[in-house]
Length: 287
Image (cartoon, rainbow, N blue to C red):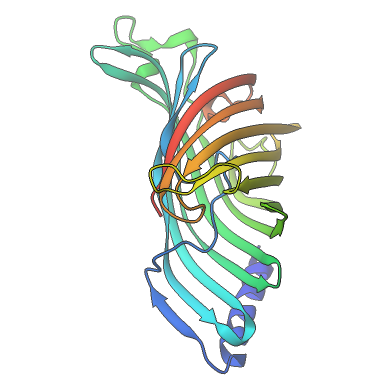
C-alpha cells in the first residue's frame, strides 16, 4: 500500500509539472467518477425493501468532489473528494419508530482520474475507507436485558485502500461501463478475515429507450457487481439491479430499481451468514 501511495503521488506530481496549463475548480458542479450502482459500499440516500421478511436497508450518506483539475491538452481530469455513509438494517416498526438492528458505517476519501477518449472514457479511482459495524438497540431486548437470539456484538473493522479501473463507452444507443478492482485492508477485526478482496462489474444504460418524463431525461439501466471476500473463506457476492433513473445519468435524479443479492450478508455484524434476497428500492442522486 505504501508503494502504491508513493507511486500515486509521483504520478500526480509528474502530471502537474508536465502540463503546460490546467484549470482548477473548487467544489465542482458535476461529479466526474460516478459511484457504482450495484456496489453496496457506495454513498447514497435511499431505502431498499426486502420482500421476503419485510426488512429495510436504509442508506444515508453522500460523496462529493472537493477539488477538480482539468488538463485540456491531455484530455484528463483529476478530482479529490470525500465520502461519508452508513447503511442500517430495520427489522420492525414499534413504538412509532423504526427498530434499527445493525449499522455499517464508512468514511474516507478518494482520488479519481478520467481520461477522455474518442468513444468514451478511461477511469480510475483510489479510495481510503474506514468501515466499522455495530449491533444497536433494535437488536436488544430491554425486558430481558440481553441481546436477542443470544447474539453478541462483533468488534468488526476494515481499514482499506481500494483501486478500481473502468472503461466507459458507447455501443449504439447504449452506454456501457465495465470495471475491476482490488482492495487491501491494513487492519481487520476479527483477525480471521482476509485482507485482500476483489471486485468486478458492469453497467448498461440508455436514455433512448423511452422519451423524457416531466421534462426529465429517463435512463433505463442494468447493473451487476461481484465481490470476492475472505470471510474468512473466499466467497463471491453477487448483486443484480435493473431500474430507471429520472434525471441525467451524471446529475441529480431519482432512481427506482429491483434488486437481487446472493452471498454473505452485507451487514457486517452478520458476515458469517449466507443469504439470498430480492428487494424493491429507490435512492436519490444528490451530486
